[in-house]
Image (cartoon, rainbow, N blue to C red; front, top):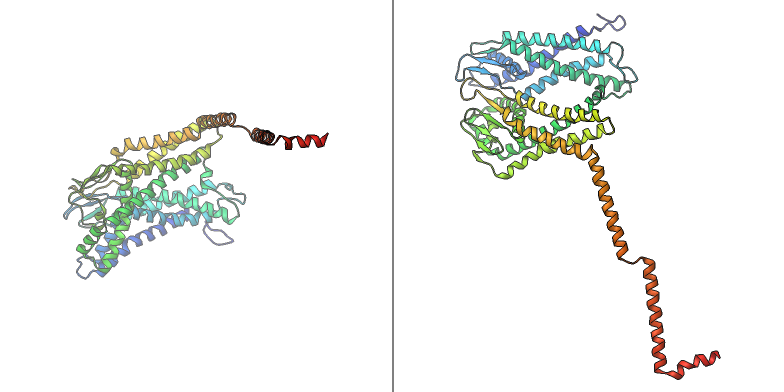
Length: 466
């Protein structure tokens, strides 16, 4: 359907389908162009142009979280390792057109409230976007088969649909805020949720983001410490200029994956890079690993010093930060609401971290690389202890009468101490009286000494007065 006055498409279904086609084209280009560049820039490569295109399609499928089946070569079997960096890029690709659509649909009015039928129009646009994007992913996977690699069509379609759902929702919410700002209104996305779920989402987001930042910093420290090994692996591969650019892009796509693996260690779990390898806070056990330069950042084999366990403070502080924000947001609410908020916060943080760890698990083939990533179950006990313990401490300290009782007791103790000190030392008035009394006593003593020394001189004033 088109508008008669502006001659443009206004149907949410059609707009959603067109946005999905544009996002598919951009996503495919981002995956295929680097593969073509590598093929054209490599002088001794046996990869054809068609092979480079199929390789880009394989990256497209993996980037959405789908899987491949290798039917020949050195590592036959399923490939399901998710390059989270590429997945984040594809999420941004799907969110961008939906943000523009959210603005075009004019979902809010001038006072910042949703207009009539706004939810229906947004839902229709999102449904069309997901259906077309998922169908496009299925078609791409179906035509991307080669003699050695076959994308799993069903997993590709489902993975593309899930990415489209998440990216589409993010884009619509961003478009909602942009539309409100254009009208001079202010809309906070989380405020659209009922209380206390808005506070739970905000606090849990703070906690999980703080954990990821801590894991990223630790990963960068490990990369810095292992720079020598990374450089040696890079030199051994000798990828050339174009190949080096592609290899750098591959490692950037895998860096968020390694950050999540580091997060697994921070919450007390273990991750593996194939059979015979394991890294945890207790130590590192490494064996034969793929020749990927970024893996040179992994610590050498052996037990770690006991001080490494202090890294558990990173998730503890992160959970504490979110809990402090939650305490501020639910202050003054009903008891039942506050209890729901605290329980919901702890549950959401635990589930979110476990989902992140689960998404970063994968494998390559059926050999020693069949299992890559965190052992999710190994992280559960410590994660539960960290989240429940930190949440309980903050809740007791900031959302119960205990803090007020301790503060009152402290003030009472200080008052009694100050009163006792006041009774033990004289007041300023008493000090003045005591000083004047001492001076009078000194003058009297001087007079007595004068009379004793010269009786005639002492009697003269009396005679004069008479």
